[in-house]
Image 1 (cartoon, helix red, strand yellow):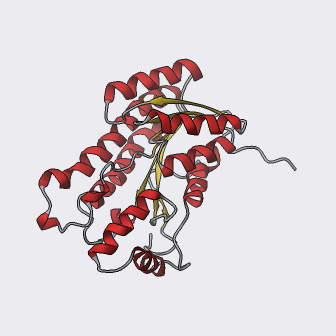
Image 2 (image 1 turned 45 degrees about the vertical axis):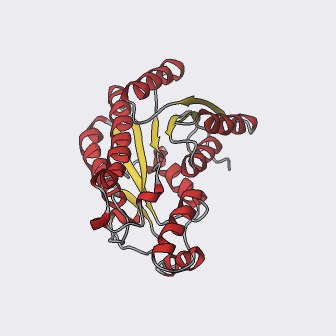
Length: 267
């Protein structure tokens, strides 16, 4: 019995495709048949990824797009629609540009540093979702997705404004969903435990480990012990879940975040 590809015939735009999460999702989308338009602040990173996907038989092209720039996002999306005829999936993998904003007590944190994750992450998610949503509503179909982490739901010390930004992203997912779902557009996301095979998480673990007076390995082991499986999820596990939710087989999932904490937090 043949098995059809999950995203065959779909056109997907990935923002922040040069990062670890964006790359993992892009490769998995491509494996499942999606045609990809990869964007990032650094063109060289997304070009390398696009060439790799094409070499493996996939369809992908790269563009330099700052997801905080409304005009740049709009112009790129117009180009995608002109080339592909529309956009089926918009996935935002834009990450923090400055991880050193963590590891500082809130009472010692400058207000601008506290607000930076909100101003960057929430703005990028709103701009990309709003613009994609307009096109999807006109077509009566589409999926908008993002990824957050556990601090959106649980209190962790020394997170700066990151937890607030993640919680705001999840609120945005719910509000977009209730407005767009009646028009055939699903909005959802994945909330994952830290993924140690991401370079950013390795750096963040180092920052928190230092603040707690332990090694990075000890901090990672402590985080893993909080899960039911006594380990942390991988980038590929996250990408598989994102890909399924982006597919038509997940039509019943909307306005929610898939819990990938491996049991560390209840739903």
